[in-house]
Length: 199
Image (tube, rainbow, N blue to C red; front, side, top):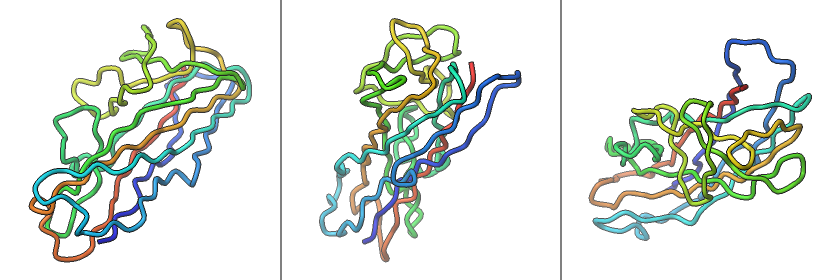
């Protein structure tokens, strides 16, 4: 069975107000977390199988010091095998119609203008708090949409950055063979939209 590519796709946007500076983002490996080929026989029969984490780097560059946040939207929500959790993202569907699995995204090693920084979290981009590296990202299209924004900063305050970077840690889970009911190869088809929100 071929299971490959949980993808983070770039989408840039801004809130409806003029901004002086703009930011671009570059995603490592083209934004793809490639799992290669996974043999069907290595999957569990009746329980989920956790795959080794993959890291996709995200590097932001702005035309000047800029306050911004980022969100992740699940573009495969209908295929999420754990859709009831606001922190999980879908991995696509098998030919049987079964949801292949789900994945979570955490962050690590944030930097601001070349120095070590912290990640902050907010529901409304007004009140911010520090978020630990092990706390999974809440997808933008969750209900209710709580703590969906992340930003670079420290001590509860967003930093105006010229450059920033963070590692997106992808942790995927594949359903068991009983749930998948595969009769042909399947492909991991996760797709999350990263959005920049100017503050």
